Length: 170
Image (cartoon, rainbow, N blue to C red; front, top):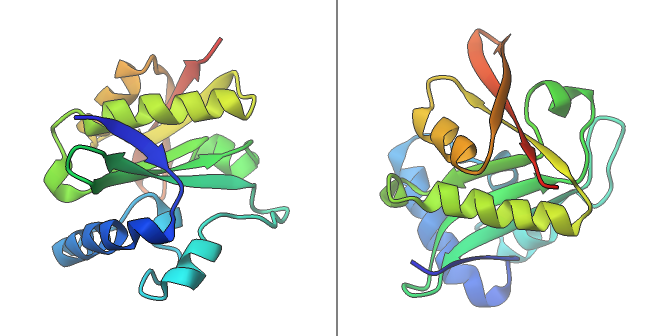
């Protein structure tokens, strides 16, 4: 499996639609939030609004990248990288939101994708990254730990126990 993170481009329209339609068909929530924030059916608008280019006091600049399996020419997931943390993201959200399309789970995709996202975090100058996941999402927890995540604590957010992991990039 040869994975790389790519920005959304017209040449990946089919890959995007295939992944999003599969995910939507399951009825489960698509993650990260950034890739479901807008309607992907209007591709140009979706691509143009995928990233937060005009942060407000409640939001931060971010970068959204899709994980391309080059051998099969499909998107297997996506990451959203927040360039810094505000109070809300420090508590629950972290620097990286990630998601793997349903048919690609339990294949090591998340671990590799997070590793690639951490390389992108280094490029924007981060030396420490916070990742957060639901305690009951064992696969996500393992993928974070496989990339050096150290559990800081668990917190209760809207009735759900969230685990907060820090990853040192130095």
